[in-house]
Image 1 (cartoon, rainbow, N blue to C red):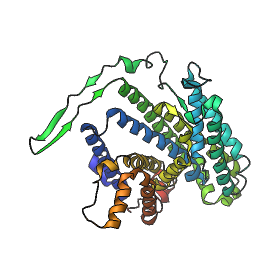
Image 2: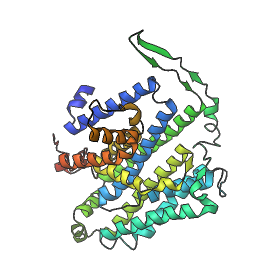
Image 3: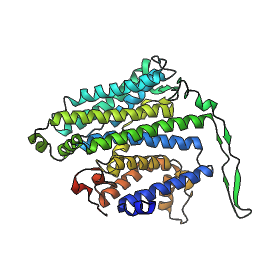
Image 4: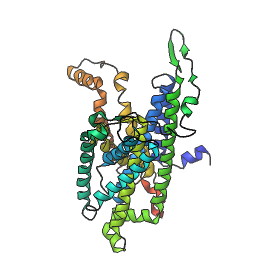
Length: 398
């Protein structure tokens, strides 16, 4: 099947997402070539996108599959990040050799244990109680890392986290052994009329290090996606969806709904912790500020935007959230400093927005959610193509 045939076989929503991602990728390459973004920062953005996708996968496995309302995404993210930082960071009293693998295992075990501890007393009750308990957990974890100064360094955070492959026999020193590539700057255009400077950057050790980290994130994102897709289509996944639609019906069919909900909650929590693990390696620094409730809000936005229960939607939602979150940082430099009209009220409002455009990103996200809920309440990429039910596989050209 040719690319054109594949494109024609997509729904309108899928075609729109393809064009959006392709157009954004083109702008990203253009910004890279013209020096607006550096190669290292571009890889950081790509890694951050992978982290948000993992967090969206985790929440989607809980809320999208089973209908479990979890407001402690930032808590499980922090558990993964701090479990890694505690055994790898240079200023951590618990740092040990080979801490990379130990941190990964510790993050998985800690997130699973805490998920079980919070789920056991709440999952037999209404979903409201899990939501309330998860809110409490998010604040408890943040206060612990903020006040347990002997281990977490309090508000100063843990820094000096090594690369993912630090200490490995071959990959450990690979970035230092790779050559630096310098690209000479060129001026493209018509002299005296219009010229744009392109290239003019160097690919050195930090770039190769970030590239290896990015490859690891991509591998885990793909692995988690394939796992969740298999789970979604399995009999276990069908039971989860039945519980989300009608828990009483699932119980009447003889299913242990409590056990299935517990498994779903633990699975999602572990995936969220994996997102925290890779953020620690990506940023080489973690602090209590990374556990702010706003990060949970962003992940919920990603899942709602993409489509509840859709793994592809979770990927797209994570991509859009990072695009809005990071793109608004540069809006003040791109937008004109003043309006062409001289209306005092409009000039004052516009000036306030442009001077600190990053603070308006929540307004942008809110308007985006209102628009999506109005036009596509099931999300941009609903999960019908990911399910095995015949009625769900019917194409809906919406």
